[in-house]
Image (tube, helix red, strand yellow):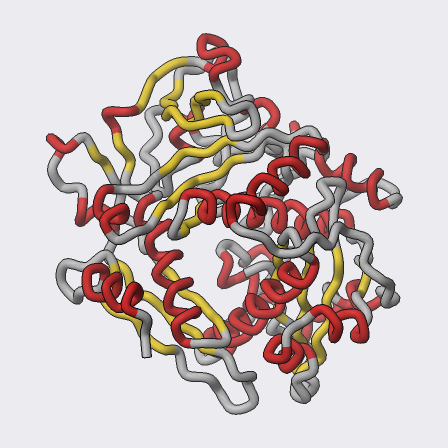
Length: 434
C-alpha cells in the first residue's frame, strides 16, 4: 500500500492525457532474476507543456525515459517519478532568464568553462567533429545559478544545463547533451546531493575505464558486513557472478563499480554508485547493475550484433557487452585481487549533513560545485526540487565509441592518486556504462 504522500503525487503527476507522466508500468522480472521492483515511467515530452511563447519558456522535442528500481515497490516508484521530474524540468528552458555574453565579459561571475574536461586537439581538428573548442570571446547564452562552494551567484552555460537546448551558434555546443548531474529530491539538499554523487561516480568510472586501471575487488566478507540482508541476496545470487570494485579517487568519497555476469555465458552488465558511506555506494552500484540486467534482457528480444563503430547511444553500450565476442574487452576487470577498501567510510546522515560533507570533500580536492535549480512551478506543487549540478574538472561520462573525452587533465591526476602509469593511449573500447 502506497504512502499518502506518494498517492497524492501519483494522482496529480500521472495522467494519460495531461500528466507529466502518462503512465507507470511495473516491469516484469524474468525467470532467474533477483527480487527487485523495477518501475518504468512513460513521460510526456516537455515541449507539450511550453507551447505559449508568452510564458517565456522554450523546449525542444526529445523523449524522456525514466525508471527506478528498489527492494520495495514504493521505493522504485519514487525513483522513477523523481527521474521523470528531473528530466522533464531539464527540458523546459526559461528563456527570459538567459543572458547573452562572453565568458571573458562575465569574468569570475561565470562557471570556469575552461576547466571543464573536453576533447583533445586531434579530436577538435577532425572534419565534422560535433563539438566546439571553448572560446572565451564567443557570445553564448548563460543562466544564473549558484556557486555552492563559495556561496555566490554563478552564471552557467544554458547549453550545459538544459536537455535539447537549441544553440544560437556552433560555439555553444561544447558537450553531449546527457543527464549527468541532473537530480530530483523532496528537498533541495537531497537533489543537490544526488547530482553531486552522480558526477563523482561517473568521474571515477570513466577514469578506471579509460586508464584500464584494474580496480580493487571488495572481499565478500567485507561486503557481507557492510550490506543489508536484501543487498546481500543480490551479491550472492546463485545465477550470477557478482563482483564489486572500489574506485575511490582523490576526492575521497567512496565510489564502487558492480559487475554482474550470468554464470552460463560470456556477457556482463555494470552499475556504479558513490556515497558518503562505502555501504551506500556499493548498494547503489548493485541495484543499478541488476536494473541494467533487466534492461539488457529486454534489449536481447531484438538482438543486434554491433561493431565498435556502431556504438552510438547508451543502449548500444549495454548491447555491445551482451555479445560473447566482446566479453574479452571486459576481462581485465577480473584480474583484480580482493583487498580491503581504502575510501572514506562515513556513516549515513541527513541530506543536509551529507551535502555539507560531500562539499567539504570536493573543496579539499580543489573542486567547486555549481548548480541551477530547474524546478518548474508544477513540480514545486508536487513537492519536488530539481537541479542540474556541474563540477568543472571532473571527467564526464561519454556516449558513443568515437566521442570519448580525450582531454587527459583529470585522468593524469587520478592516475597519480592511484599510483598507476598514465597510458600512452586511452582505452578505445566502448565503455559498458548504462
